[in-house]
Length: 557
Image 1 (tube, rainbow, N blue to C red):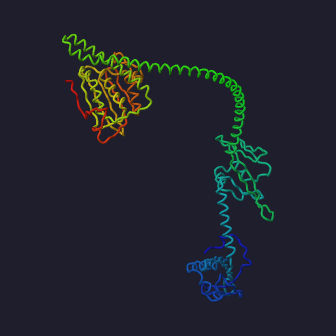
Image 2: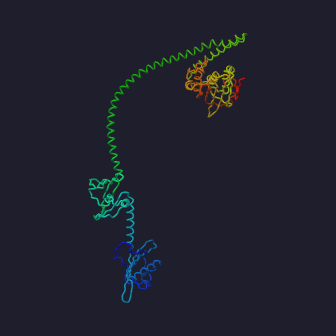
């Protein structure tokens, strides 16, 4: 139950549908004093004619409130108003107003009651209220300052953004400006002293105490109905500071770009001049390069001829040296056995050793010449790695016994690799020969083999005189001989170069390490493996027997 006084005034002269008169002894019965009876919200007019017919549609709790209101009206002799909402089964609601006036005469007191149907007006009012709320929410969601000003320059409405600013600084000139009517052709700009200055622009500038310049664009739109009447104006003040600053920055950028373009044109002009000079210089260089190419081509031809002559000379020299050495080496052991004089026999042994060294030098030269002629390997064979190590030590057995070296070998069993039949054994012979010849008296040599990811790595370490750091990178070059401390009178600097070439041709790698003079050296070669089921049954060299080595130590004695 609501009081109609809470609602806005609505004309009700034509909405009277029934008038009722009550006795002073309310709420006994209801008597209709009007002959005009109509259907109310689907209820039968007969229900209203019957005593208490109207009351039966009111909730008991509301009836008690109604009685209090009427009693108060009778006591104070004032008019009362009550609002009813009748709810139907189809969900619709009808709204009625009951207005009563206390009447008296000399003998009696009664109530003149008028019942008014306000359903259509009530629904229209609720729709108008909802639309107004939506209208307010829409304007409050706008961050710009929005105000609605009547034709007589009164503020009808401001949105939340402008309202918040008014609450913060109500005396702000800019706030007052947003809430006043703006002429069509003139706006105002606020300086730092808040002095309005008339300008021909639709931009407004505001300077804050923090020296941050804010710029606003104010627009006005009239509110005009279909009849042509103007109800007011909507003014929107929009912050365009970022836009203005971006425009200024853009203009500055354009100026800078224009300057740069001018500089660029000058640079292009200079480049064109430089290009002309450069083209002439390039032509001169091309002529010089062409001439140099011819010279280099002639020199390369000469070098190829010299290399060919060198290789022919080396091969011929090796052949000429090997021919006389063969019978000498074959006869020396017989001669030594036939000599009885100890001194003579010792001299012949020294002579035999020198002849063997000479033969080794000849063999090295032959190996070097052979490698320079090879472009690929076509004589692959399967070798047992244990045999290759054992074969290399046998070749150097005389010097090993003479220096009383200790040999330690550790290899995985049954490992075979695919190598060139002629070049493969040279890898281990040269490396072990190098470890033996550069070792100290009663030194040691250790061989360690490991298999990993289809490859075998074999490290040959000696306790010899070592290698200086500056020779570790150049020792693989041809004819490079070590320091005086590691020099061998018979060495010509080809052994390590030959080993590296052979290992590379087999798809492997080799590295040499040493901590310096007196610390020995370690050479590690890595070669791809070739697994076979029974390596001990394969021929390694032509008609050569396998000598398996798993792990052993050869003592000095």
